[in-house]
Length: 129
Image (cartoon, rainbow, N blue to C red; front, top):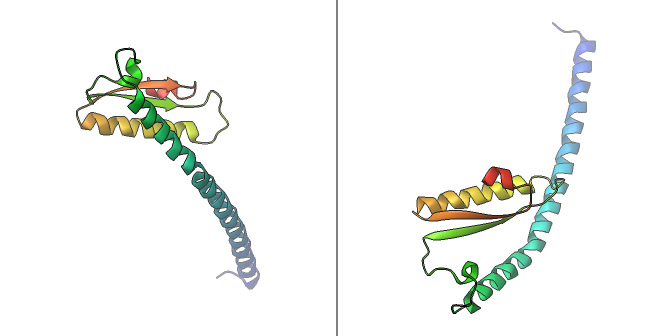
């Protein structure tokens, strides 16, 4: 049976670990709140970008229109434009973009559609080629 001194030492050790764990939880909560507010702030930009792209695609017509924007009239071929960074130091952004692009490609392929990628940025090229 452990002595009283050993038990007190173990109790102090557990209390110290508890303090460290609580501090890490507080830091993680602060980072999560910051990330959530950044995502909320970016939502209007994403919505507006989608509206601009839809408007641009809707206004392009005629034989002189670029094929990329005018399309072929068939929804069997899909082009996914993936915009990654040229440099790192952006956390999991590039890997998350690649995962999302692959998931969307699998979804379209499951529906029997052909998928092609247009890649912008150096960091996302290798996984999607």
